[in-house]
Amino acid sequence: MASAFADITFTPSVKTAQSLYGSRESNRRFELSENAGNELGEREAEFIAERDSFYQATVSESGWPYVQHRGGSMGFLKVLNERTIGFADFRGNRQYLSVGNINADERISLILMDYPNRRRLKLWGRARIIHERDHPELIAQLEVPTYRAHIERGIIIHIEAIEWNCPQHITPRYSKAEVEQLLASLVEENRLLKAQIEQLVNNQSTM
Image (cartoon, rainbow, N blue to C red; front, side):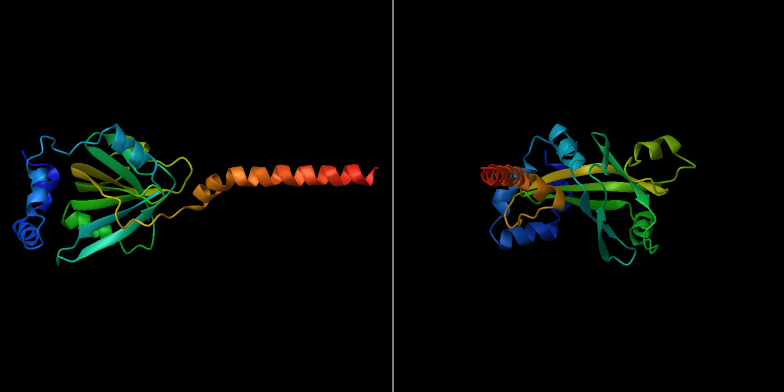
């Protein structure tokens, strides 16, 4: 049984490229896998909940791909069950490129990055657009408590395949919050040293 990842991505032309560059045999493990790789487990759910952004690819009627960066507060991409994720879509520049592409072709692909730990999760799925008038309960599940703007629509994605990528060539990058966390102990140590120096100066001035 091939993994869902291999079923979707290992097209004849991809297999030809693998043969040309000498990776055909090593990639056959995906085609012989006993794990379908199309359900989100605890590891994937935790990883998704910790993300504050992802990259999303859709395809237009003309066949051109469109890659969009989506960002929000941590956890804005919701795991609804082991085969379904979704997120609230707020008004942006009103070009609606991804929305239009999804209406024409439901296929979608996501890449989620953890730059500090050099981890990457790839997702393939089928997306549909929902609105509050038709799915108020589902829209409520996609709400972001820290962002009170009106939800223009929801994007629901049925997972078809998942794949963890190797860390090679992922350059570690850190958000402001992550840098502050890394420096917290040094900042506290600096504060204590300053307090000790100030105390010594005060003691000497009173002698």
